[in-house]
Length: 198
Image 1 (cartoon, rainbow, N blue to C red):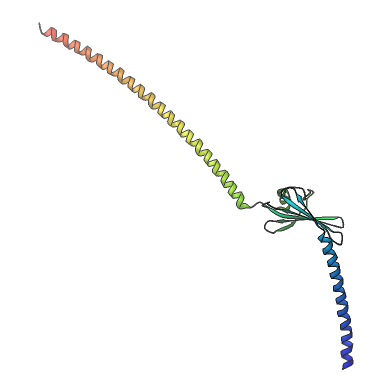
Image 2 (image 1 turned 30 degrees about the horizontal axis):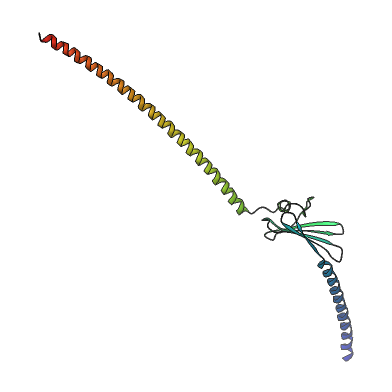
């Protein structure tokens, strides 16, 4: 029985020893990669962004451009591994997409990178802007309609004044005619009275 336990224990110890040395190598490799990544450089980028560049132990170059105030895109990461370039963009909501573009995403505007990734603008902001535009249109139409109403009122006023003048003139003319006919009638009546009285 003791021999059987020993036979199982020895290989078990050997496996554990190999596992430990493997973990130690991984830890050493990870430390080297961390040291290599720790040598990252950061510089200001266009369109109010910041670009961080690092190269890992395997020679993979990682360039991360972070946008400070773009409403559509948070960051874009360009990874160059063995001469193959991969571009990944992350939207403000955290959605990640691989971007297939010939544009230099480290220099292009944030909106161009967002367009290339297919990130749409916030629909709430679009709706607000569109509502503002429509309100502006309504205001313009209201002002235009107000001017039209004002012009028509002016026309009506002019026609009323014109009609009043015409009526006044006709009334005066009619009164003159009536007055002259009345005077003429009075003269005739007066002469008829003279004829009756000898």
